[in-house]
Image (tube, rainbow, N blue to C red; front, side, top):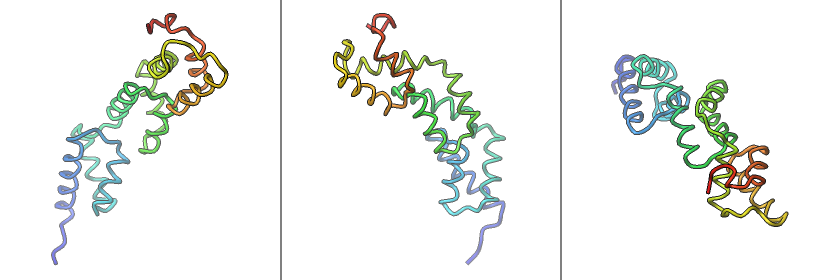
Amino acid sequence: MQTDQPEDSVSKATAYAVRLLSRREYARAELAQRLSRKGYGRDTTETALARLEELGYLCEERFVEHFVRSRVDRGSGPMKIRAELQQRGVDGSLIDHGLREAGCDFSHLAADVRRRKFGDERPATLEEKARQARFLAQRGFAADHVRTALDVDPAELGLE
């Protein structure tokens, strides 16, 4: 049985990673994990990822930007977005930067998500208010975003 030469192995790992990146953006750690599962060693993986970064195919900042935008479009709050990015191995400072650069008013987004799910009327009972608050918290909105979403009239935010 013939073993791959190191350069050949790096080329194969790079080609595999390019195929993955052609479908969607990946975080560096996420892509490294995929290469490792495919059987590539740490040195081969690191060399392949460095090449991809050099070529501009792999960019952590771009990944974060796309990821944050897609999650905001789905109605996810900043806490959920942060947790998902951390699970993918993204550095905290990049996450902070990505959330800031998204330019999203998360209180406004929470109010819009609440309105789409529950209608224009604000919750009438304490139980209903708690139910809607739980829903927004599960979507990853912070307590201040939830409070604003529950207490502000949708017309005040221009949501009607």
